[in-house]
Length: 278
Ligand SMILES: [Zn+2]
Image (cartoon, rainbow, N blue to C red; front, side, top):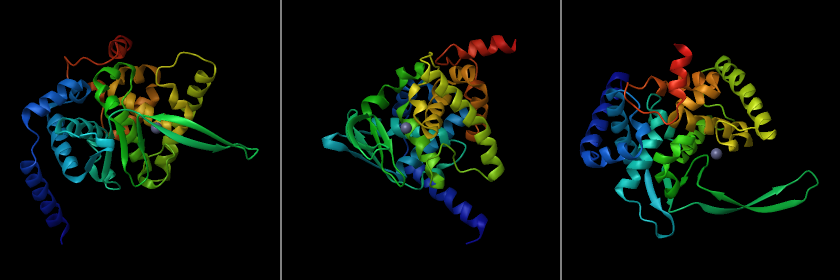
C-alpha cells in the first residue's frame, strides 16, 4: 500500500474506533476531575488525550487479579494516565504489550538475590506496580486511584510503570528510551548520569530529597521516578533538577509548567519559578 494511503486508512480506522468506543462525557469529566494533572494542557492537547485514551482502551486487554473487577471507570483512569507520557510520541511505544493486570491493592512478591559470596538472600517486596519487557503491566488500583492526591509529592504509579515500558522499547531497561542516534544517547546520559549521581549522594547522606528516594535504586528507576514528577509535580522537579526537567520536556515533547493560566499545579514550584524569572 502506498504510504499516504496507509496513513489515510489508519486515520479512518482510528476515527471509527473513536466513534464506536467513545468514552462517555460524564466518565471523561469525572476522570479529569479526579486526576487534575491530566488537565494541565491546552484544550487541543486534552482532546488528543481523550482520543488516544480511547484507542489505547481498544488495543489493550484489562484483567482483574483474584476476582478484582475492572470497571470502565478503572480502565479509563489507568488508560488516560498511561497515555499522558506518549501524548506527543504516539501509542506505537506501547505496541510491545497488550495485557494490563489490575490488583485491588499492592501485592507481595518473593524475591531472591545472590551476594558476592554466593549466598542466596530471600526477601519479600511490596509492589504497587510492575512492568516487564513484553508485558503485562501490573498495577494496584489502590495506588492508581490515589494519584489525584499523591501528585503533591510527585507520586504516580501508572506513569512510573509506563515510563519503564517506554524505557524498554529498545530492549534495555537502562533509563534511556529509544533515541534517534548515539549523539542523542550521549546527550541524554550527560544530563541523567550526573543528576543521578548527585541524587544518590543526597539519599546516602540522609538529606531531604525532592523526589521519591526510590529513584536512587538504579538509573532506570531514576528515569521512571523523575518522569512521574515531571507530569504530576512539574514545578517541584523543575526547582530541584531544572536540567532533568528540560531533558524530559524535550523528549516527551511536553511542558507541563507552561499550562494555561488558572491551572493549579501540585506544588508551589511554579510560583517559585515565576519569582525566579521575574
Ligand atoms: Zn520502577
